Image (cartoon, rainbow, N blue to C red; front, side):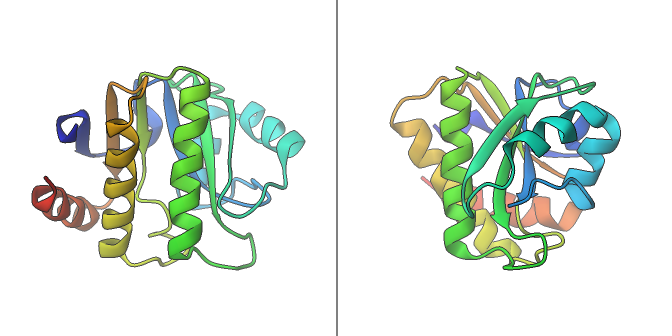
Amino acid sequence: MKEKIILKQGDITGMEVDAIVNAANLELIMGGGVAGAIHKKGGPSIQEECNKLAPIPLGEAAITGGGALKAKYVIHAASMGLRGPLTTRESLLNSIKNSLKRAEEKKIKSIAFPAIGTGIAGFPKEQCAQIMVDTILEHLRKGSSLEKVYMVFFKGNIHDVFEKYLATVK
């Protein structure tokens, strides 16, 4: 299953996948970081859909169309609040699990995740890598519509942390 996870340096908003995952807040306000980049490239329709779905519970995930993005969908993984709380181990774990559930509901074959929580929320990169990789692998092992899971990193040092952790996983 590990071969289905592909680490990539770059801009998640340009990925040609069925869905990209947004590191979201409970209010689904697309301000800065990954969310801001998705809003800028995807256009206002994504935020308009978010406004109809928000707020969502901490650790939950919502799905919208991809607007002008190459991706058909955006899955909004709510691992933090707009003004707190910041991402915790539990909220990250649950938001990843729920993002994967939304992907299954749409029979998504390819998805791209950022390193959720490591930007504005300041969640430790090493813990993020462990939680995300382990949760995704556990999901894939149970059987999944997902054929490719990209993990896309804007900053190089995060890629290295994920690569190091993935190398230790069997």
